[in-house]
Amino acid sequence: MSEAAPNFEGLLREALAPVEPPEDLILRLEETLTSITELAAGELEAWELSAMRDPRNWARPAAALVAGGAAGTALVLLRARRRAQSQTGLFHGIRRVSFDRSGAERALRDLGRETRKLLGDR
Amino acid sequence: MTGQGPQKAKAALDAEFSELYRAHLRDVYSYAYYRVGDHHDAEDLTEQTFLQAYRHFERAQRESNGRPLRPWLIRIAHNLAANLYRDRSRKPSWPIDETTTLAAPHTTEQLVEGRDELSRVLDGVRELPDDRREALIMRFALGMDNREIARALGRSDGATKVLIHRAIKQLEGIVGDPVEASADE
Image (cartoon, rainbow over all chains, first blue to last red; front, side):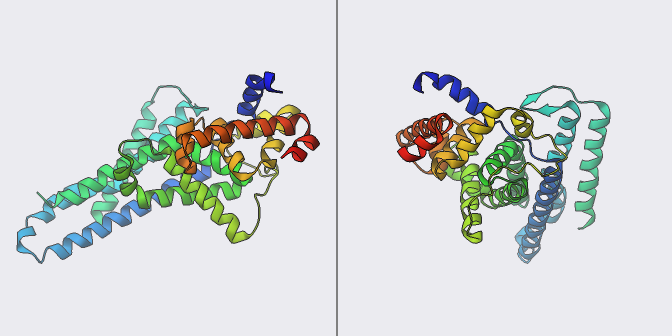
């Protein structure tokens, strides 16, 4: 058997080929991760409000408003990038590099919507 | 401007986590699928792995000293899978689920379809002891090297090399002569 090892390993590699995650899992997972990121951003905001009791921190709210939008949008990038990838075909690790205009526009709309949602809640 | 500190740091951390997620979603799902043997449990396991990873990401990053975090992710999945079996008091639901209707392409089923040889290899993998099976999944499904596998399994590099060697030998025996191999082990 040992003389057939390289072949056997090839066979094993083929039998245990990577498995693409189902699309509905990707959507669900990214929604969940985005939600918990926003939740965590909310907790940070609560921490900042409590810190306002200290006059030395009074200069902070305006800065926090600007910075806060970024916290919840990081994982939205996931969705935007994934959408771009699915349009260009990401399969078996082979990524064809292109990013069409409609994909870019949708990605920007996603980012805008999520950012508005975050800032609107304040 | 000191108020921006925590939120900026969090935004940066989230961005890094999203990179980790993007880079290794397929690895975690593949590991989970071959480990638990059905798509439903594999999805749950993948989801739980990333949620737990997100919770502990900052610490993991701090303690990794710049080393890749894939072994850490797979170790989380490994621990969760062990808990899953402990909770349910059962073994993986082999054979790999072939009845589930899936929206996404699943390479393995397509490959295995009509390929008896590959089916025999997969059947053989299922018969291996847990640690050997996991090592082979990490090596061949995820393409991890010995060092990464060692970190994921919490073993030394040398012990991992031996583990993989023995797993392949045992599997060759099972695929070549199932009765003889099971008697040998």
